Image (cartoon, rainbow, N blue to C red; front, side, top):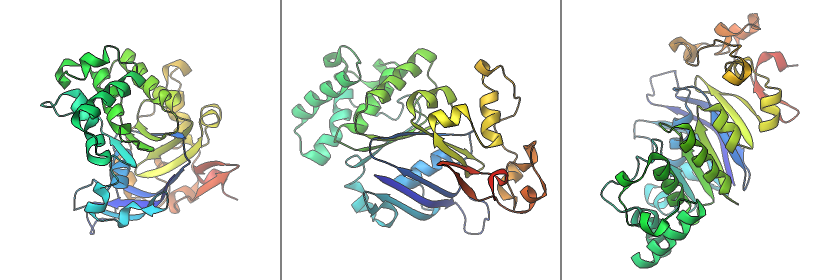
Length: 308
């Protein structure tokens, strides 16, 4: 469905440091993948690169195939016919991406008007049905409301409804729980669980939220992808030392790790493993050479411990 291959992003041709470096992800139809990592790891930049929504100063390499079409090779005019139709992006911020001057029903229905030729009346009627899918309650009332009249969790549900309104089969969600309390986070998780048939790639720094929405987990650190696995394998047997440290730092696991999530600034430019200065298992090779992304029985990891 969506095949991200060797995608890298730089914001200056003179810089050797990239915001995203050589990330590959293949999302099969109907699967849900959570992309986790600390702020600055490149997660959100990757989503924006996939949609070609980065500023003109960004240099993107690699390929992003949506059902065989390379999005990175398309013109802006061609992308406008695809965004919101075949692939949708849900920005972060608790639904703050909504237009404060437009009623909720009109915003949800806008993709139907643009891509399916619906009348305004028909689009708003469909908005009610979309909100019912996510169990907002009093849907006929809320479609006539403005964004400020809804809670953060309700606005986020409206954003998700907007994302799938025109039938997009691929949903990219960027930190959908940012700024929400625990009850509203659970509500957003339920929304994603209601998706049936859509392919989801969700960026989050909330490990518990990732566990609730993702069938697959991918980990990024200092612009690189360090691990990719099925959810069960990741949480039961994480392979990368960074992944183990993240899980050990969770309260329900006893706060056994006190590792900070943000890498030092110079980690982005080291020639070896970017986690080596913080890794209890490092050896000489870790400082000298970048580790490959190794397949360990379907569980992928970037670590010299698993190389032959």
